[in-house]
Length: 384
Image 1 (cartoon, rainbow, N blue to C red):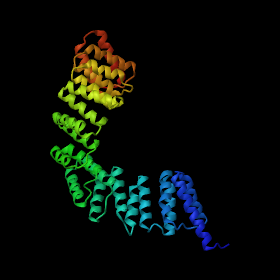
Image 2: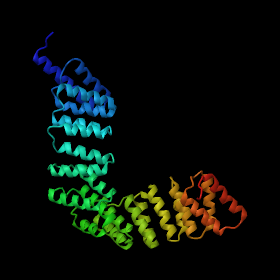
Image 3: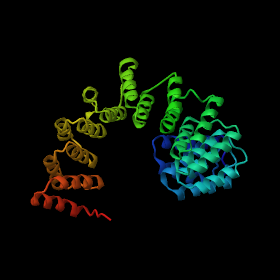
Image 4: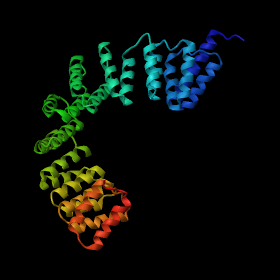
């Protein structure tokens, strides 16, 4: 039976529409089933915009589905389209098949910026950092236009590899290529510089026309990390008084560390007040930082109050409280914490053990020493 051209056109339109609807609903198995039905009926989809949707469905189903779809596309001669080649490459990247993605890239007769972004982003995202940076340098020679997420990954990779010279070259590329004004990219660069070169970080921070909470947090954290606590606290004051940007948990953790390192209890209490006003006292990391700050500022009473009121605790919480008691030579309270850790079945780690040994130096009662010994034995920690 022969079908009229108008009938076939209507049928194809219906198939394409149905695939798009199913894709929007995330019904990936049905998307693939529809595609298989068209293949079995000998119908060739002329609407190439549905092919990426089919490959997206495959990446949500399995590698087998994708390779099957890829074989069908080869038979139809559709992989020669750049957009479809990009979608195939993206599928392989999502399946963590770098070699297959590279093979697809190499076979493409025509590539665009999307092609380059997929190959660069894919390698960096999957942890092949050095290779990903090599691909990025090749892409630059080809004159591609990187997207924001690729640029952020490139800078993060330079940071993780501690390849700061390469990071500075990327910085130069951004300025020359007109990608400099993207705040997410600037923040990534700032985070890289605070790890290696605070002077460059300061200059970059001062040059930024727009700053968000990530910008301020990165700079404050950089000062604290480089032991410039007074500069970090001064910048924090400027952030909350002049800028109107609300600090987040990450900011508060850095500021509380600055207060702890400088033993500035007065400022620590002010920050604690801000934490409570902003509802950040429920944040586990902030709570642990408060315990550490109060302990180092010789206020173990406030530290224990924070610890006692925490709805959620982890090993860091227990160790911070234990370390606070040991630091302030409150060994009986420290020993009580050790017993509580045993009762709560808290896992003992190296920090716990060091504190227990410190307690043992100052507690000579045999029963107490035996109690400490009982905690050490179940931990399966051995001293070589």
